Length: 197
Ligand SMILES: [Zn+2]
Image 1: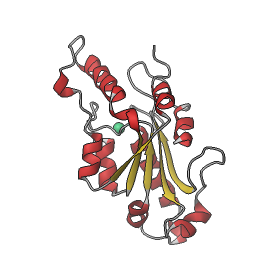
Image 2: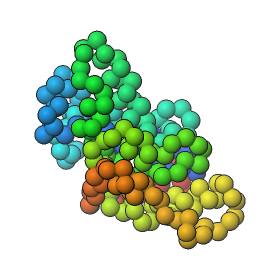
Image 3: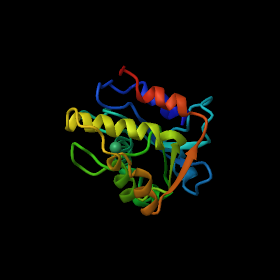
């Protein structure tokens, strides 16, 4: 998760969107670790993150447009894996089933700009687990919804029934294990708000 926090520093800042980092990885205990080891980097030392291979890093607006961290991490992994086609590696679907994902914020359940939500993208990719910082889950998602609301309906007060981000529910309903990372709440919050007053 500390590696993901570093990624948020690369996000182009936006007055109406958060800075989020996300990493798709294969844990060291995965049976695929040794096979994939020659082709992917491990987490940088000193991040406190567990040993694992980074399949793809993503951050907000990394791919031009209003793109999201988790979807970008998936897209970056898919293009990297396509480049490795000549190595006859295991099918990408098999890798994704062993993959886990860090995100500094709860994956979105609705894209105001259209397209599938990050939570849905992760479900479709069939990743095994998603790690979130425990707060995402309260203050940030409310703030994000208010922000979206402001953007879409200027000055309309946020109705409480629109406040819930459904990301965690979509992930869990889709069979993904959602794990909470405790202790980095403030850092993730600060990173998310970078560039905004
Ligand atoms: Zn998203």
